[in-house]
Each structure stands twice: as C-alpha cells, then as structure tokens.
Length: 130
Image (cartoon, rainbow, N blue to C red; front, side, top):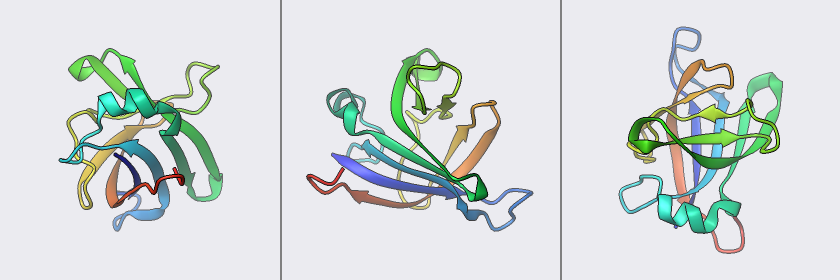
C-alpha cells in the first residue's frame, strides 16, 4: 500500500534540536512492518514521488528509484532528473530501515554527504490522491 512519509532533519551539531525546515515528503509502498515494498514499488513506481525541502534553497521534485548494487543487492535512491546521471541522492540501507514514526533513516545528498532524518509521520495515501 502506498504511504505518505515525512522526514525531518534529525539533531546534529549544526541543529541540536533537529529542524523541520529540512526534509523530505515521500510517497512509497510499505509492507506491514514499515519497510519499503520492492514488489509493489515495481508495480506503482510512477506514483513513488519525492519532494525535498531544504530551508531557503527551495524544493526539488524527484522520484524514488531502486538501482542495482550496494548493500542487499540494490540501493534505493531519489532521482531528480532521470535524463541526467549524477543528481541522485542515495539512501543508506533503506531496505533494512522501517518507515515508522520516530525511526531514523540516512540519505546522502548528491555530493555524498550523509544526513540523518527522523520519520515524523506515515499515513496511507488516499486512492486517487497519490
């Protein structure tokens, strides 16, 4: 089932309390335990969208993709321009992490710098409103 997932920047040296001004809104399929569902993603990949919001830099729109290689045989990535390689942001072992409120995930920016985010909400996507 498709879900809307919101991630906010977790606490770090620069932001000791974290920051809701930096993060992602992701529409992706999750299984019953909150893991990304690879099989459903293959069927519904056109609906797997990502919006990155980054304080004063504005936002970027992308898609959730799965590329061969990496831990577990594949890497979940956010691709902002599918016609141009090199702008992707890789998730760190996203196949192992649960997208459940309060959990943490790490995403590397397109320069390879890792940022940790906290899952702040997960809600089922309404039919017709993905």
